[in-house]
Length: 429
Image 1 (cartoon, helix red, strand yellow):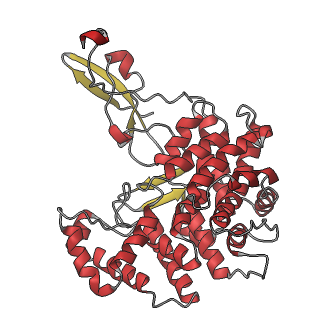
Image 2 (tube, rainbow, N blue to C red):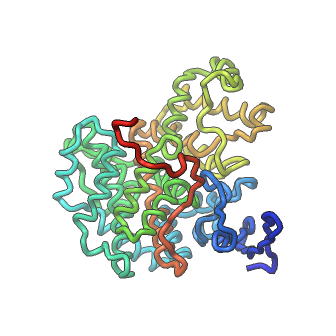
Image 3 (tube, helix red, strand yellow):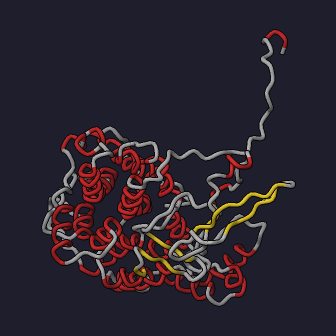
């Protein structure tokens, strides 16, 4: 808490509220006593100016284009670390020592199989069911299978539930993909790393051996790392709000998956790829740029700009490098989609229209290209995002559960409906 106070004057009365300081970032006005003192609420649709919690996990400076996991810049982690090391960092606060990482990796690896009866859940869905519909249902159903890790008051059970979800979400997502294409489920392998295991479960078939290229596995691992957490976004806030009611962890993460499914949140990389395909070739870019600038035209450039970042998305530069490596490896360096993406990026970084509005390429701009090149259908993009973000949701959920200030979420409203009125019998209406 700082020595500063904020003063609010209503009519002839003045009220004081304490100002709180974080480690970095804007100070916040503590208005917890606002209603008690004034009888009023604040009005903030979308919570764009409201801190709903205090957290030590992730920090974003949108103006600088900075993203930190526990203080570590995202570009350093993406370049030097691995996803499971990042998982440990998000969950426990510090980078692991060698023996700690080995133990953590072993615990995750030994929990990757799902209960055999969960296979029946998949058979209950239509073949053309969206993978996110399946993942949402199956993650929620985990509470019906793993009763020994649903007591949130027990720190041991919370830990077991956390490891189980991180370990099993790749298996659940891969099974959703396999079911959608009519292929048999592929069991996880303990001799593969996290990213390689996911690729193997998605693309291996019993008829022949599937070899995982390390460049593709590295790109997959980076996608997981870059999406692992992103502060108090819509899905993370959903997980926290669900958890505030003391719901079991599997239900909370299922709620996060459902929120992420929204095209304004997790579906942005799918929308960006569809836009690049719609443009088709570089020579058509000027036409679409003019459409984007026309306020009366419904066309919008997807994959540019961000709700938080008012600078270049720090994850986009790393993703751009991975896109080039993957496309070069797979022999599609002349891919027209990538050519359109590269030319659009040049324009966005030089055209005053984009520069003035700070519409820089974001992480979704390149991630969709990579996933498409690897062989994933667009319907799997958001499921892979959910897989990546699960560790962030869990870290935020665990932090909230351990917070002594935890209260059940209860947003207030500005009511503008009909005032109190008496019931009218139907014969008199």
